[in-house]
Image 1 (cartoon, rainbow over the protein chains, first blue to last red):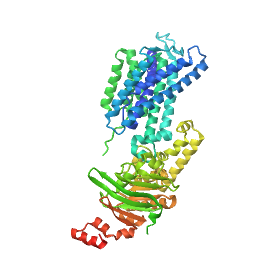
Image 2: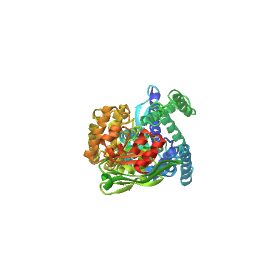
Image 3: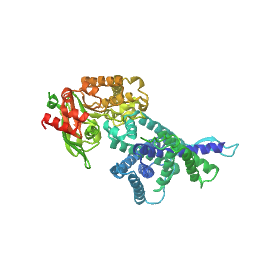
Image 4: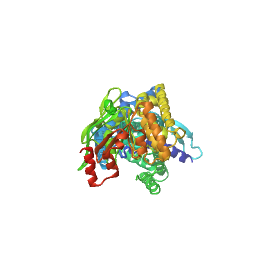
Length: 309
Length: 281
């Protein structure tokens, strides 16, 4: 039971990170029907920007707690802002000129943008792993393992990740459902031309979608960096594929679906590594995806695509 | 009898639209008078919807131009504007023959999307909206009031929170007009608003259009096949046939124009000559 609880905590933490990235995939797919394959690399760029900012500000575990929290909030804001600029730029350069072109064209430029970002970071930051000392240590001891011989720990870092994710997702859901920008995004999703005829600047709305996705990916990047303590230029690929899987599992185009999918992929991976084998955790995650898609082709919370007549 | 030429809100000048070898509109010029209800009629395939599509950025005209003159004196060449500015700046709104509502959104949300631009400014490009600043809250409330006003006028107020796709057909038509009006247009282009409506709904539509013209200084340009609507409410009728204007005048003038009768009823070849002689062609 203790072991199960620990895996559950770990799984939810990992799932939170996947969920944050998955939102970027699902939103872009919802609004322009395109898979933004560079999104995983935007996440990686976000992690690097966060790392550079942390080092530049001289934050270490020795910083007093209040100052540390204030500094991390600053890091978060800077990373979100700068990564958003990257997201905007990728959309502007690689996707917007091809809008109205055939469907596969932006898919190819997305892969191109992904490779370009990876190589840019590899060349400018070096190919070696970049470590970061843990900033928060310790946590709550939920059980001392006296009976079972297994101590359950909920670290401060995990609390931070889960709480930040929940807050961001709540804010984000509010934005989509209640603000004018969110309404415009949903309108563009359904009928872009009609939205334009009502005065919605469709190009700007799409850009803002990319900006929002990139900002959330930057948050995920910072979380990943602090949780694992190491980044390199290639982390975007695996995390991107996992988050994409999460988006598809939850039903691509659906926001709650992306969050649910992220959580599920995180849990499946963690439990599989905890109870069976670490080597096959990805196989488990992707098998579940395959099985779900066979029985529910539109994903868990996706809406079935209605053929327009 | 040409009051629409004195102060037109929209001027179509030498509009020509070719699709490959097909000339859909050929050198069409007419004026839409400010505050008038102008009807654009003609047999199927005459090019009426093509005129709308040129005016709202769907097509780039092969030749000619469409000049929109706003009441504040600003002038816009519609064929050169990017599509979102046609509504936002030139204040042209339109509805479609096949209804294009945002089916997955509620009725109220459909009308709120139409007020996106003022709300976006009021919410400091969303930041203020997220933080719940008072400026945005006020603007949001005003927008909801504005939407409710139009829902009341179109008898949809009690169903404001229903998804738009669940409305019956006639109500969807009215909702589309309400949504177009929420953008605060100076000219409202309606593509067959009475199509598929029963006589009662058709009558309500007439009243709604008269109301819009009277209370909101909005000029109306409509495409319509239902002659009871056209003759009843319009001040000015333009008749197209095969992309060419064949008649232009008040409903009574047009009704008695032999060209129009020929186009609508069809005539034998020798009769064409007779009629052409009669009208001096």
